[in-house]
Image (cartoon, rainbow, N blue to C red; front, side, top):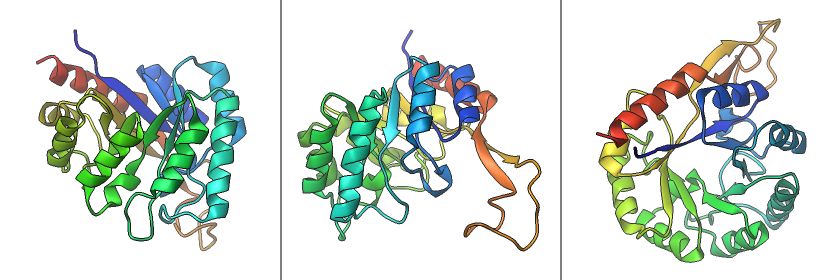
Length: 250
């Protein structure tokens, strides 16, 4: 039977527990998925490494608000890559763009060199590039192992056409992994239309934060950020995997 690999992005211990219970094949560790994900703490990486042998890929993103980084921010990313390796990570998830939205090739090359033997995924910064095929070929020639993409659309289902084209262009040299809005309702369509064998999902559900006072006080730009949060759902992830297997083996 053919197999689809499910990578689950997680930013809390409860999400990790739920992803493991669902049978995830790999975890992408991050913090603050509410802003697309940031680099997780050393404590989080270390704690998750201690409880699972699954491959752990660590997001390397020092801040929200785009992917054009200063030299100081690049130095932080290089440090975080080395720290992730020391803490037992199997891979890192990187991305850097110029102010024009094209790949920042010098920065990307430095990040690749810092990662050494680790598996390297280029994240959805790719979805902001003005010429996706040119950017894809640059990544392929740089030796990136994997590209996470929505096909430059709001969801991977909507971007399936471009994802299929990238899959055809990959020549087996780089894994194309759809992500963004992946659910049990559309994962089968994504797999059948694109021919991919890896899927990235969060399977998230909204939950109440216990004991949080509501009212005019807020800690961030989201007025309900202290009252609610999102976690990975074991049931949703299991449903995604069930539909993925059906599609892959039809």
